[in-house]
Length: 204
Image (cartoon, helix red, strand yellow):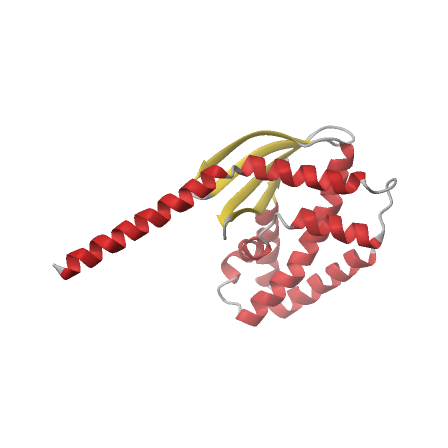
């Protein structure tokens, strides 16, 4: 009888937790999260003069743009099957370096989008803590199609992949790194990534 009561209590607890998490994800729609996030970024940009940004303004905008992203998950997916073979130290090193590279690219891309006009969000699909949000961003020649892949993590939505004009960021890097690691050791990959990060940061 005691075991039955414990089992029932555990079942009730897990059901309650699931229901609570589901209610939270339903209360905060991913498309709304992205719309609010973009509006805040545009407000920050509106306070700057012209196209030039002071170092402090650049860091503020870059930090805000990238606060929507889950770099740990993005990094794990980018390494694919090679992630499991890495030590905790190597994983942390990769997340730090690769994350910095993506953060710089995000900054450049999204500042251009925000200055070009308003990103138009077209719809969302949400299923068990994961979401797909489709949008179009303004560009000089023609609009850019963006698909955001998000998951619900630690009480908030976070982007773990961007598909731009049908090209997945995660998939592109995963293929590139997989080819490289078939021929070269992980240490050499990190040397190349460190060099890429240094060049990007030098352009600031």
